[in-house]
Length: 339
Image 1: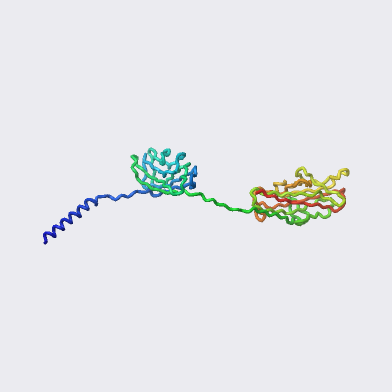
Image 2: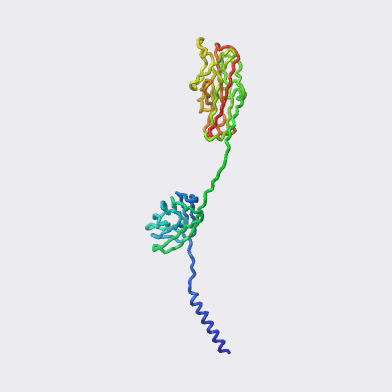
């Protein structure tokens, strides 16, 4: 009995040793990956052209002269028109099928001490909406792989974002008080939003104004014009003529000619909007054509620093020959935004 038992033990020991001899010498296989790898797309929409792949990577092992990095794009990513910019100390090769290569220049290295970037431009995206693989691999001169990593990009439909902003416009007329300065000249009386009352005219020039305010989100801004229904006139049809309607000019007192009633008195308009008037200039209203007194070329905010407010002034002066009477006319403002 003892002899048989020993024999079994000996046989078992031989079998165990044989298994170790067969399997114990097989090495484990582990792929070596890059320390960092990513591909940033400029456009991820299906079939997009002119797409840029910015591939950022960090080698685990530095590369020497003539060693190289391959960038292998999954089929469906079209590199036909692609151009490549490789990291410093390397030179790009024209795409070969789905592979772009950067080879280390003579006498140079591609270090693993810093992050490198390869840019592939003018690629074309696949028409499929799914993930695609880009493989980054480094190689010995003979082609043996040193390390590699796969990165994923995703092709997905574009998202259309829409919104609506309603057009806005507010326009108001406000009082301009006496002594307010307009282009270096003090207003002689206070107006209201609906009336400009010069009172008694006795030969001296009088000037009054109104504050115009505009708020709008019109892309091309707005224009404010003023028009009169005719010259200041009395019940007997005598009128105070308009100042020169040809173009703005510096104010001048009327020089009466007994044979020409048009020289006996006049009224003109000005503004502190330098796009409409130079300082000190006035122009007459002709009763037919609107005259621009205020404008801006973009959105405006009358409550802030947004070019939305202007002071418009009206000046009148008569000579001793101007016919007596109560004179009146009507002014109409029009604010026109351009969206």
